[in-house]
Image 1 (cartoon, rainbow, N blue to C red):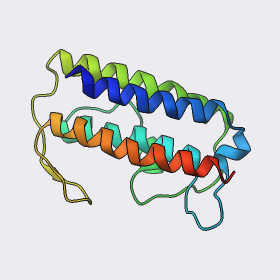
Image 2: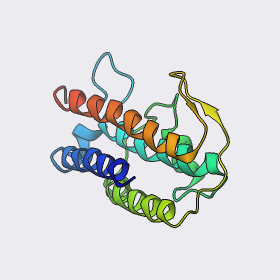
Image 3: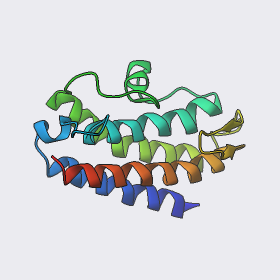
Image 4: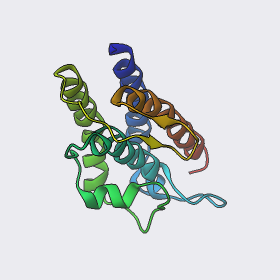
Length: 151
């Protein structure tokens, strides 16, 4: 099981490196032809992980409902984020990962509400959610890597 968390850790280290190597203006810039930016993609990874793993398990999330609403599927940046929010997102990259790993190892995830993703994957248990989440974060880290070339 630890490989799922190792993969997620690697993805999130890549995302942190992108955040650390770009200015606030670059993180907030939505390039022409795109509908989101680097910071939205990173926030979306955190928001989605919380929904896929915790909410669908019937458990409270580590982020606020406002955070989830701001970065959920189908949203786009509605304005620039502050440096404080960038710093919060940087912290959340690893606090959410570590708590999820700890919660998984402790057996916290018992129930799961089956969910079919927009890509057609049906998640039936938390293990499915963790596996799919890495795929999902891989897509959005790739988007962030592409966006950095345009900002």
